[in-house]
Length: 428
Ligand code: KE4
Image (cartoon, rainbow, N blue to C red; front, side, top):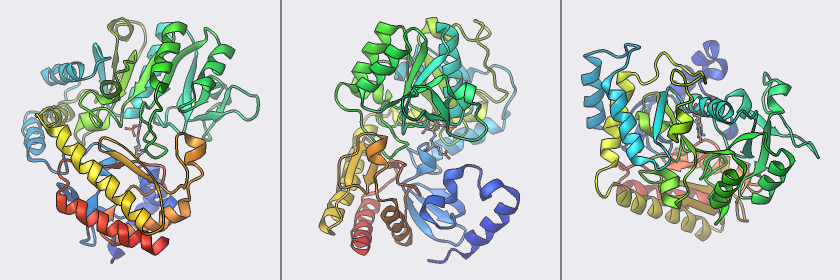
């Protein structure tokens, strides 16, 4: 497959954009290849600058759940554009989308729009700190919540319970306030809570983890977090930037029946335009400026274009049968790939929740970061590049999630499974 123009464009980009990309994971570093420059998308496909076509399982890392260039979204954005992209003043569309989010997400009584998932989680943490008067936060290894300083933190080594920076530029003093537990380990949470009693403002978790590959919560894990937070006066934040409106219209909290105090959203609610949101109990949200003292702001927050794309997207998602049809396609492709791997003599550990799925190159079960990090990333890279040659565009990292859209056809899924069968044979 010819990638000449993409490589030429990548070199041009590298001269003026750090690493040649505006977000690191796009650089294909962990798979050892130049990234493809995408010219256009349509439905379940994307087309690169060399004219190659790909069945797309990245979907812009989650937003494109209805597929690329959906006519309803194009019309909504075009119509809005003719009356103005942004005013920096309230518009009715913001209230319309707010009401749609409130109607959909069990935990949300009030919601604030922002422009990215990072802004949503950063703001939710500040609000939890302002609401509780506490400074520490608790997150989980392997979970990613965007790049705010407090969240680019890993567990301190040895007995140290305080966090250490996970990136240069994050001050040690900031990192010390972030505690890190193990996903699916309530014991690790209880230990940190006991050692930091009455000083933890919030626990933030991806209720279905999507940033170490797709890792499911074990039975009782989310319920246990809910109980700990209720008993300790800790704000429970579900970071559903990826899973919100993805695994169900009401997200993981609808699917698993566990209601957090706050929820962060992004991706799908913007329909491909920049939107993030954080919402929750009225008594917490009313602490936010200008009704309360916790400051948060944004020039383009809730801008009409992004709101119209989000409204159009959610209007498609709430159609009867949308998630049932997506569930069927997602089951077929995830199970088909796993079966192909087994048949080729290269068993993988396959996970899926709704239209989020992952093939872990691991012989054992994956239920947290320590088990996910044992995967054979070299074998994954070979598989990824072989699938790319077959016209299947997966996330360029073992530690990401694949997404199915409503636009994926039966033929797309059959082609994907057949391609996987050939690729697993190559690497077995
Ligand atoms: P953004 O700031 O990238 O909009 O959202 C950050 C974020 C927050 N919470 C969760 C659960 C997320 O998955 C994300 C972003 N996800 C990554 C994909 N692993 C975005 C891709 C990228 O970084 O380019």
